[in-house]
Image (tube, rainbow over all chains, first blue to last red; front, side, top):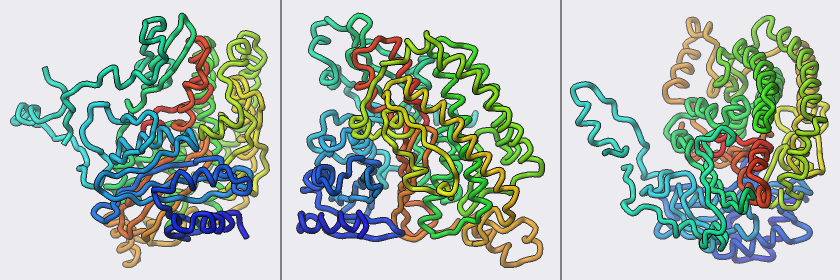
Length: 173
Length: 413
């Protein structure tokens, strides 16, 4: 029995209601858990002497617009001592998306969660410093959402230079 | 679309980042960057200083944010590849490789052996090139000008090797899904061999200039300490975590491209300070050279295709286009519509010069990725800066930033 299979069995036993689905794809395991018990699951993964998932490798937000639940957050956790890696996933509804923060479990989640908040507008409840990370502090909107248009630079010609210039978002005097 | 909020950011939003003493004016808040030569790019630091001692160092990132992940969602898998070069501009090959590995995993593409060998060789040369830039800039931050010039001289030889093989010095886009762009040209291996013989002679010079230099040692030993447990908790990786005695190298932990068949050691240091991280990287030069020599040996023996024969992923050779209808169709389909990847999500990781570089790739059955996320090593390694710099002098801060080897293109994406 591999370490990941052992983990999944332990999770199912300890959190029978929280584990919603286990997906196997291309040799990777994804465990979908309930957002409400996320922190408890993470603490269990980190602190259980047999599991020992002490390293959060990655945290990413995903937008499944227009499906519902719209958002998902994917956590890739890694057990360094036994060399096992799998994905935890949380699905969140589109209106007022909220997930509890895991900064208390792995401090590295701090910036990752700020990035997801910045890019998707997902609020991480209990986060110590939830500000925008990559976009300017006064930016409106969350650029990585699927319904946010991709930016482009409008081409200016001599005949419409001023007209296009007036529409451009950069600072004017 | 792009609008700006009318209310400006107030100081209150940042109050919680600093100590109480900053409120009374006992300590000073100072901006360092974003245009500062020793922040290695456009990194802004909010420093809270007590005299010349750093109380807090809060990184403010995002000045180089170019929305690469968002842009990739609007392009086909193949066209998005060129954007990965621009992420970590000192590890272009590694970025290509990681992204291609994710596609290959998602589409279950087999990569021919010769391609794997070329990939390993290119990745290791890239690691040497990246470490050379790191060494030069780290040394100049600590006031050693000559090392920078020597390092860039040597790096230029690697850039020439890349140019020979791909036509580009930096943004190579050489590694493609299923293999590599072209086979290596005639006479290329001889140039690589010459370089592999040349580099050890100059590495000794750098070692003698820095490793046993008492001034350099004073500036680096005991500075920016982080213990093994904290380094793991903060998600550090690469030489930055190996300097703290944690034996974590993706090449060893989850081998890819046949790394398990090469002989090499993973340098470990237990000091946890700037000097330990420095020693780690210096030793990695020699390990990379070792791997390179083995790949060169294998490359000479191994013949065969350099890219997969699966025409749904890799374009057919140009010569076939005039004679084969099938090839023409494949060529046309690949460069217009692109290939479709199945629905599902994968995570592929490689050991970049800076640490674990991961790609989270989610396909939706169409020809464009649904979501690409890069787990960038610089991003995680920069995060504990406040922890690393606390209690040190401003001058040491520069040494600490150099020792975690950040690339702002990697941090901001």
